Image 1 (cartoon, rainbow, N blue to C red):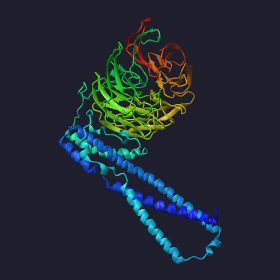
Image 2: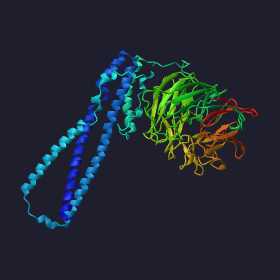
Image 3: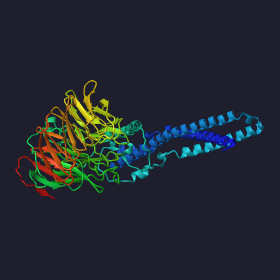
Image 4: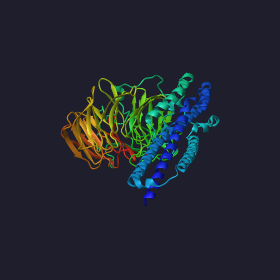
Length: 631
């Protein structure tokens, strides 16, 4: 390349960078002014619908119309925000090209100063420059007008009359079910990178105005069926500990307070198997139990279903489909085989049962299978599938919803599904479940994700403390005992965090770390089970390793404590019963006869195990009694 060619290239790059930067600058200004000029809450369409809602507060079609408009407003607003952010990056790139081209051109002139002596006509140079500026200005002005015209002003395309003509068939739920921008899955139609804080602030403004109207004119939303208890009451801790209301038992920590369970069985021969029943649809969730009813879920691409069994006989009492839910995706999200669409364990308060699926569909049923309310939380952006389980505090259903789009902790009314509060979390995606603990001073909800282990006030959602110690794709839930939280994840660490005015890590270990299985803390032990088949126990206060045991396969299910023993079932369906002490003592080993990923559940002298195909009831001291089987 000759010197003249280099100079021409440098000038061309400089002009390109300058023009590009100017165009982007104008586009940014136009986009910003357009965004500032549109007040979503002053939308004529929204005002028209709100006025109609004043006159007809029970009109579900109007509520659905407001939800649809809410989504469109959010889509327009956040698309403009994304365009401004992207334009800023483009402007930086244009200016950088301009600066580099000018420096290159200057270096070429410095090397060959003799070229400056060439005769030029100053008048012609100035005239050409003026013409260039004029043409560039006209081009920039035209581009600015076009960019302003196409700046995603979706509100102008909205027609309230079209909305009022639609009559979607949906269950009656309080209008605040219109949630975050991910609540309706619209592929390739909106940017994925949306600031969580902007989203939360904007939605609060939109929802607060609508919610005030609904509260004024319709203080009590309609339901498909009323819960059995009309009063605002909830079971005591003593009542809950007689049941299995959540994942890993009444406190969500893997500790069982009942006694007298079988320690051995044989799934193939039926020894100590009281009954066995095939579950119609696949799921990795564990059973929950209230009185004589056992609940679990299953799902495939055709349906999401809640099942209720008689825990004493295995008879299927009823099943309920999670269908016809507003916002539910028409196409199932992609999930991996080892997570599936029904990995989240249900929750119950003895009055209702609640189930969550990987589609974001959440359903509340009474204990006879009648739907109370249902809603979609937004399809989780999750490359494996959603698996965080539900837990209840008083009148609040608590949901850990940490996805690739951002983390949050949600509290919904158990009565009608309305939002009590929502807390945005500065964390990455997590598959762990919340654990509710009583520290002696207060109730805390403990969550873990990359990079934080954090405690929250379950009444308000306020973060009480956090410790940065996690990393990676966090799956295990925490353990808790005597004021110490135990958090761990494979390729990260296991950290014992002592709570107090300033929570601190009192010990760590990296020898054995769980990938999916949650930590069990009890009897002075902190127990971990790994996906490569080792279960190990550490001193809960010092971190000293007491013992380790190698199973025949890895663990996805969590170890649980019952009647002085640790029960742990590996992925091949082999159950190890180990004495919960400092010295390793194997009590028994049993074979289920099929693979298993669910956590063992204990109730009234019986153990319940979910395999990949069947649900089993194991009886204590039934001396070889053969099982009854329901198809």
